[in-house]
Image (cartoon, rainbow, N blue to C red; front, side, top):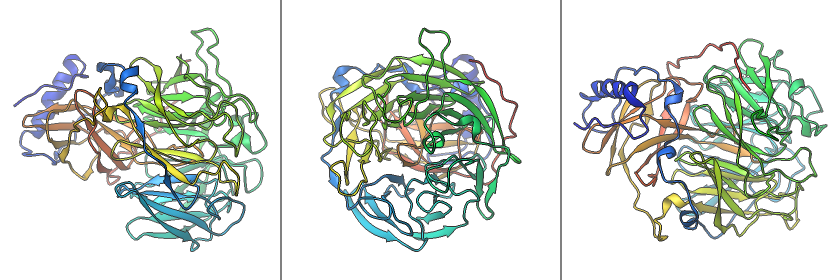
Length: 550
């Protein structure tokens, strides 16, 4: 039996952990099984992005990336969700090419395997699902709330291909943000675009009981200068291992949001790096944030107020042990309305946006994507450019096959900035240095459902070096609070069977459907196996006192 740990192991502690893993799995037989006993939780600092041991991205490898030709759609997709069957649900508003009405939503279901889509007009919920909150629930259903019909809640069930109307929110809202919570409930926050201006305090949805106001989770201290409705729009909401939700922006003031009881909000500090000159960030309206590793996120771009030049700055925010902010190298381009997508290897690709904020126009479009590498904390521009701008009302999401979909932009009636289409980016990790397709590892067997803190066996087609989970996601207006990446500790137990430790903390590993990727020594990812992190017997976290250091 080969007891070699992956090359991102950390000394004797993980060697001891490996022995524990092997003792649990030695009687487990072949791949695709789950150990009966839970494994001990590990400090999240020991689960770091595996790219640290790989060659940094360079100009030669970046040049292998390529975009597909555009695929035409029947609508402008301003919102979307990757579903547990690998298909992608896309939707516009009450009309295919614009918005402004109520009571219905134009949708299309896109199949990446066949590059085809089937259209559907959703009228049964009486909900124009534009400028909404979006959340993938633990059971694979999709929750969509607010927007043009500002109090409404609609739920899509893939298993029955049906839409149903949920209970109304207590506070009508649009342009708000959602996030799933550790117990499977949903927080919604902000949203003065519709349903009246101001006082868009927090509320939580739970299956079976609907929406509950959080009187202590008030919006006031989070507002940006871009009022009236822009000041409480599109928050970055990031559940953490302490049982709370990090609010790192887009305003410069960062907070911990506590959703227990009647709710509470605690100011952490401003988003600034005091260790460097010009380390202070400002409000970053329509910028982006993504959690690329346990308790680590990348913030990029945005504007101080609408109608201004975009920023090119970037920050790493660490929030696994308190909160700290570190300014890193700038992007190659100023960007606003860009989409940030975390990749299986821990890198982050930035797609689209403009150098100067303006809605419903292709002016000042950034056509080249950039990839941020956590090893070097620098950006590399991909020479291959998109053929279609992706600005306001565009979206981007990671596909289970490792490609990235970029779609939409516009939704402005008959304007020239309407883009009723999508393109697929094939990142450099899918190619050899000469541009030929890389041979990809294959996950032969893996469990479809796993428990928190368990150890599972995965059978591979050949040797690999590491594994990561990336959560299935839903997005609108470049806000994707569903996506996050968790690298996994693994042990090679022989015959191309690997033992993986599933984290025990649901604050990091939110319940629901995740994409399990395996990567070889060159960083080439497998096609993902979809794995459900079971909410049954969920080990709930009691929120702990907030600590921070800036």
